[in-house]
Length: 366
Image (cartoon, helix red, strand yellow):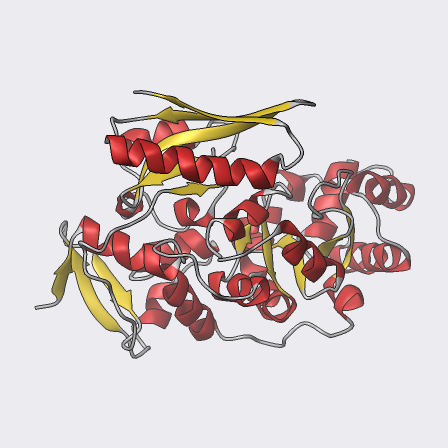
């Protein structure tokens, strides 16, 4: 019979692989590669996600990687924006082609009736490779060729067909502005991989998130029929307390479930919350809290981990002379945990508002 992994065992295994049991001595580039896709709908969350995971990280470490084209932001898993290394971009984007095609067959696809998809892709490629364009600019130019089609649908046709990366200054810490896009091939000077195999993606996912079910893999990626892939691989099997089948790398370690877990502040959209199906997401977030974190408008709120589990939400407010970290707790915490939350929150404010002469961490009890 496969070994049973309870909620706490799964929690500690995933925290270790997510670099959340102890700050790692990795470089920012190594960490982005290990995490295999950091959710990045907004520019700042990956910076906070790396800060909470790495020893000595400062925002300039990631900004430099973006400027030097060693990491990029583009649409990948689940047809959402992720931050990945340049090498992973070139492999993951063609692997996610079925996800992009499925997304395009929805509302936007109906608006593209009568538009030749190959011509649209070729036209879009020519335009964004001449100079990076915002989606508004791209839509206006495509509309000159296809005036009968909605601009948003034309842009979606290009976005879901080509590997469009967001170019700096978008994604640079402290810099605003709309996202401008060009192709990954033009930006990185290399072609996309041909016919990538999903087995490597399964291994990389398990190294960063495992142990996991097939449904977890499919929730993370947006791909389907991964059960056929998993069952052909040399993986170790476990089961959850509820009987769900888990898979893991044979060589992967799993910490003692009683390993202490430090307080951690996770950013909005952190992939740790988004990369598991609903049943196994309880390894880090109780189902009763899901509705408070996963909002109806698609925003995934920033959270705090206490003893390895989501115990509240946080947000930062910044003025000219004062900054505050507002923490809303979902459940009571001990005096020691409260002190740790305040100390870690103060360190986070040092990053978020280094020039504010007044900084305060405010905990609101459940």
